[in-house]
Image (cartoon, rainbow, N blue to C red; front, side):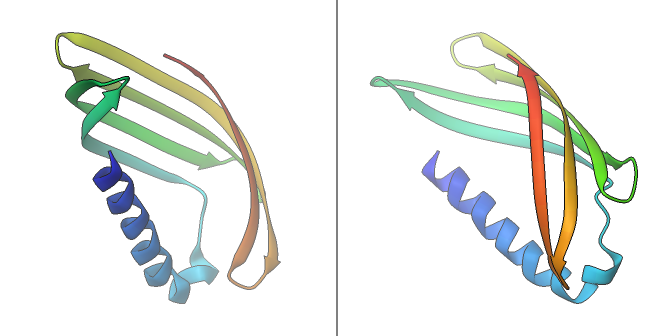
Length: 109
C-alpha cells in the first residue's frame, strides 16, 4: 500500500510539472480508465487484489464541474467490492497557474 501511495504521489507531481506550461489551456473535463493492484494489511490480515477503475469529470459552466467514478475490486479470498461515487465541485483562479478547488463526493461501497 505504501508503494502504491508513493507511486500515485510521484505521478501527480510529474503531471503537475508537465502541465505548468499548459495552465492557460487547463480544463476540468476529463475521463480516465485504470487497472489497479493492492496489497492490504488490516489487523494483521493480508489481502491481495486487483481492480478496474473509471473516473470522469465534466465542466458544467465556467467554474462548476460534476464528477463520477466506479471501481470494481476482486480481493483474496473471493471478496468482490463495488465502489461508486458522484460529486460536484467549484473552482476559481487565485492567480495564474493556481486554482482554489472545492469538491465533494457521495459514494457507496
